[in-house]
Image 1 (tube, protein in one colour):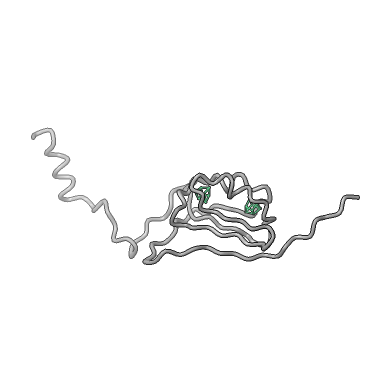
Image 2 (cartoon, rainbow, N blue to C red):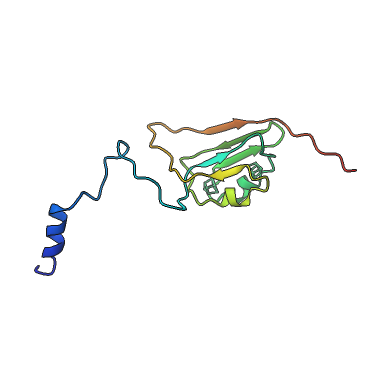
Length: 118
Ligand code: SF4
Ligand code: SF4
């Protein structure tokens, strides 16, 4: 009991360890793995991110030039962004805001013309 007393006193007089999220948001840590972002103008719809994603939350359709993601299934591992050969997929430092309903990210780009070999 005497061993715990300093900790108990510190907790009584110290600042709260919790925040009133989402009203109060803590700034992300350095190198934090946050929300993913795809620059659809740069994306080549190769599908590498969809294959690599351990949560299987990315879907790519090369013929329709669409890229979609279910952010509620994302575990923010960053594998997709690290393996994107075009560099269009990035991972922000900011975390995704709390939402009341499930939202899908759906992006439509343009079908890229194959560059003819010379
Ligand atoms: S890996 Fe990159 S370029 Fe390929 S489909 Fe995914 S986001 Fe697009
Ligand atoms: S960060 Fe990880 S879980 Fe989220 S979409 Fe990318 S590969 Fe999938």
